[in-house]
View 1 (cartoon, protein in one colour):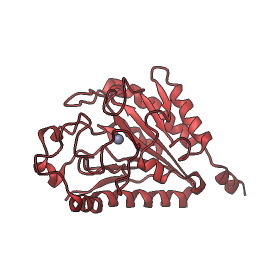
View 2 (view 1 turned 135 degrees about the horizontal axis):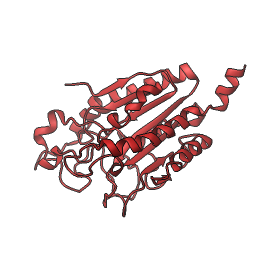
View 3 (view 1 turned 180 degrees about the vertical axis):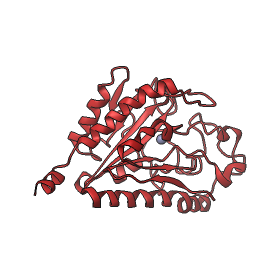
Length: 271
Ligand SMILES: [Zn+2]
């Protein structure tokens, strides 16, 4: 089995997680449908779009396996992120377009889901937890950016066209309010793009589980509309010219995050 994730360690307070950028279907590929093999619901090309992170000293953790194998941004207990709304499961059985992911009779059972949780889900979260602890030990606090992207139209999840930048802080619970405002202000400063804070996407499992201002961990999710940097239809090609235009304000949002200092760190550094 190839590695479950790719980790590039940096020495700034910023950690970036990309739980849905993986494309491998691994040993499950033969059980999956042709629709699944197109992996249409991937958060496509995020490591490429975020290539500027190398200059920012950020730690980057990205998934290598597809969200169709297991969704790293879901509660392993299977609890819904948005109760009452149409959501995909821990081990999804349908695509966003509601096509079956598995061939007949191949849908994963309880033992299969539990095995995948052990093999794919836990190693990613163990690595993320360890990086948060390491960064906190070095800086006194950690900043977590959970990077996502999605097609601008997905009728299963939302009506009409999604704004370009969808920032989520779990309604303010995952991140210091001043920090969230600084990042949101940077997003709104990009006039050719539309932005929202805690709109349809408020931050998924990772943002909610790890973001804890009282414990000096501040988490923000960016759900980026894919129309800003790529073709939204198969084969989902990256578009260099428009990608460069959207990468610049994303970088400014992350620089705004890095420019922020928590009260506690300010006190420590002036002591
Ligand atoms: Zn995602």
